[in-house]
Length: 160
Image 1: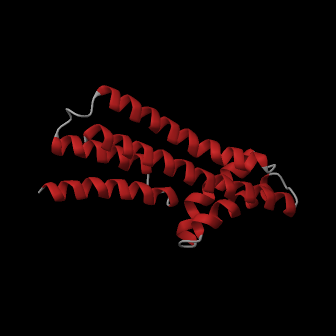
Image 2 (image 1 turned 90 degrees about the vertical axis):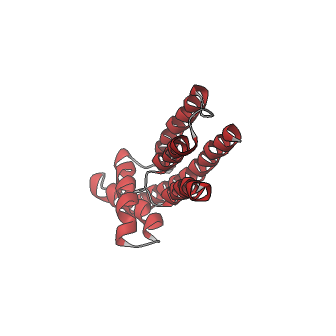
């Protein structure tokens, strides 16, 4: 039965990594669910208050990284708040409209359309905002992936 329990916990962590590229899946929720599942199945005694505080800090950093990487990417390339919102909407809608490629094209197209419609920027400037959005998204995926690995690594250090 222990193999089944560990399979469920690892499945939670795998789903969290899928959530890096499919933002409709809340990555951090699945990581924390894996921790809680471990606690229910094997006991919470190894998961001290210090563990939960440290993991809670990582959760906050994950949320901040998600927002800041997009913000910095768009702003660095001259984008506006509308581009950030357009990028976010494109990130959510893109995978549904264009499976697989939508995760990459969605933020780009969303930022470009937002700049064209809201700020009436020229096409070239709008494309630059879209590129910034794309760079921000990719940077965010990398940063969040590293943070998630650290969270899971720390979990295994604590329980072993």
